[in-house]
Image (cartoon, rainbow over all chains, first blue to last red; front, side, top):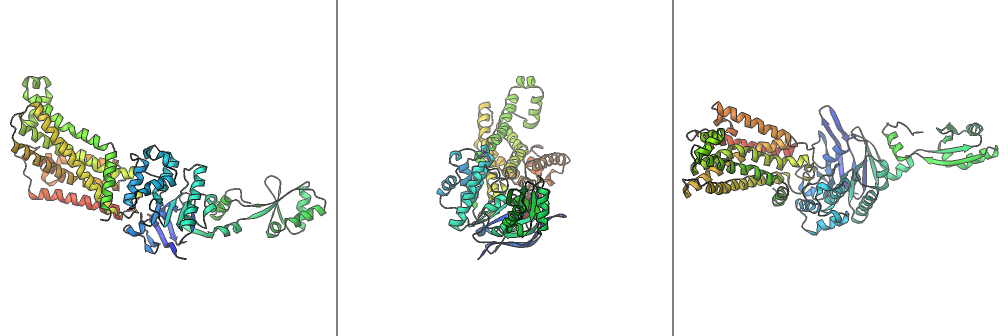
Length: 308
Length: 261
C-alpha cells in the first residue's frame, strides 16, 4: 500500500529544547492514523512540520512522495488541514470565509462553498460573522474549510476540540465516511486515546517528542491489561484457596479480590468451581479490562493512579 | 506568483469588510479640514488674534492664506501624517493575520505565500492611493469653501503631483513595518517601531542630517523645513528606495523562510 506520509528522523529543536526528536512514522493511504500524546508532547509541532510551516532541524517529511517545503503548491492542493485553535476572519461571514479559501485553494466550482456549509451543518450560521461563532461552530467552519477542495489527505490537530457530544459523533461519522467512501487518508492528533481508538486504524503515541509506540487499533485491544474481580462471603478463605491453586491474588481498593494472570482471565469458571467446591459463597465474578486512558498513561510511564 | 489574482481578491475583501478603511479615511481627512481651518484663520486677522496660539502656528507653517500655501500645508501633512496612517494600514494588513491567528491557514495552500504577501502590498498601496485622492479632493472642496485666492489649473495639477510624490515616498517607507508586523506577530512591535522612527526622523532632521535618514526624506521633500530647503540629492531618493526594497524583501523572506506560529 502506498504511503501518504513518511517522516524520517524528523527533529525540531528550539534552542536547547527538543520539541520533536527523531520521529520516523509512516501513514498508509486510506487509513485513519491517530497521533496521540499529552499536551506539549510534540503533536502540534509535528503537524506544523508536516505542513511546512516550520523547518525541521534534522530529518525530513514526505507527503504523497513529495518532500515537504513551503513551495510544494501542487501537494497542498491535495491536503486539507485544521489547526489546533480554530481561526477565521472575524469580520467576514461564514460564507465569505469559505469563499476566501475556495479561491485561495483554486477550487473552480463556486458550489463547493454551499456544499461545505451543508456538510458541516453550518447553514443556520452561513451569514453570521465568524467572530460571533461559538467555539464549536468555529471548529465546524475550520473543518468545512479543510474539506472544501475534497483533499486526499486530512491533517487535523485535535479536530473535536470544543465540540459538544453530538458534534463529536457527527465529526466522527464524517471522517469515517470520507475514509470508507472516498478513500481519504486522515492524520489526526488528540490527547484522548478513547476518542482516537473509536475511529483510528492505527495509533502512534508521542511522548516528549519521541514516537514511543505505533500500534494497530486491534492490537491495542490485546495489549490492554485484563484481570478477574472476585467477591465472596469469605474473602480471606477465598484468597487462600485461590493462592493455593496457583493464582496471583491481591486485595483491591474496595476489598474485592483481584486475580491476575492469563489463566484467571481465560478460565473464570475454574475460579468459580474452586470456590464453590470449598463452600465459599461467590457474589461477584467479572473479567475487567484496563481502560484506554490508563493504558495510555501506563504506556507513557506517567500513570499516577487507577493502575492495578 | 501562483494565485496572485485570488490572493488580491481575498485581501481586498478582508480590507473592505474591516473598519480600518473608514477609520483611516476619517483620520486622514483631518489634514485638509485642519488646513482649511488654518486658512480661514489666516484670512481673517481679527479671528486670528482671537485664536492666539493657533493663529501663530498657522503663520509659521502656511505663511499666507492662498491656494499655494494651502497645497504646501497639505503636502506637509501627508508627509508627516501619512507616515503614521499608511504605516497603520500596513501594520493592520499584515498584523491581523497573526492576532486573529489566521496566518496558519495561509501557509499550506496551492496559492503561493509570495502571492499572498504581494497581494497584501498591492492592497496597502491601493488603499494609500485612495486616501491620497480623498485628501486631495477634500482639499479642493475645503479650499473652495474657504474661498482661497491664487487658484490656477497649473497649480492644482502641480500640487497634485507634489502630493502624489510625497505620498509615494511615504508608502515606500512603510514596507519595513509590514515586516515588523510579521516578525513581531501582531500590532504592538511595529507600532513601537513607527514611534521610534518618527522620533528619530524629527531629531535627525533637526540636526540637519535628514537627507540621510530615509523616513525624514518625505517631510523634507514636502518642504516642511521651508520653501527653499529641499536639498535632497539622488542619494536620498535611493536610500528611500533601498529601504522599500529591504522592507518588501524582508517581509517576503519572513513569510517564506521563517518558522511560523
